[in-house]
Length: 118
Image (cartoon, rainbow, N blue to C red; front, top):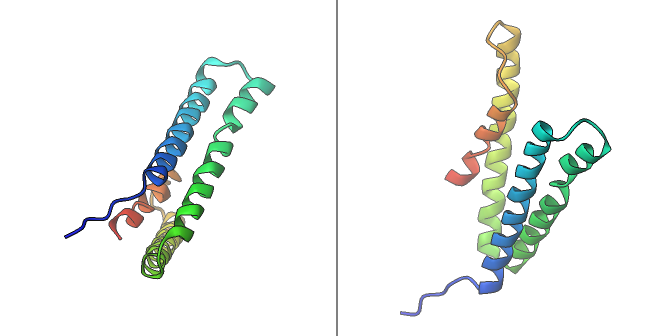
């Protein structure tokens, strides 16, 4: 039985784009602490946008390289995640109006972890 693996170029492109994104995100987070307010700090804080665009383009490239079954399954997982995050954040918005404590928007990002379950 032949076992298929991912092409090395696909794995490398995902790993390198994620590495660039997380390094630039760490630099942006540290710049808030160590750099004085100004245009340089603003530029460093905005740098994670470029690697994020690289991650999106790599994901788009891999999506088009997949077969129809995997595309359907990915789209289904994305739709489930979008609906879950939307209803979760909207539902808690109304609960906050009723007196529940205010939560950080990071909780909606945590809620997006449903995508990993799919």
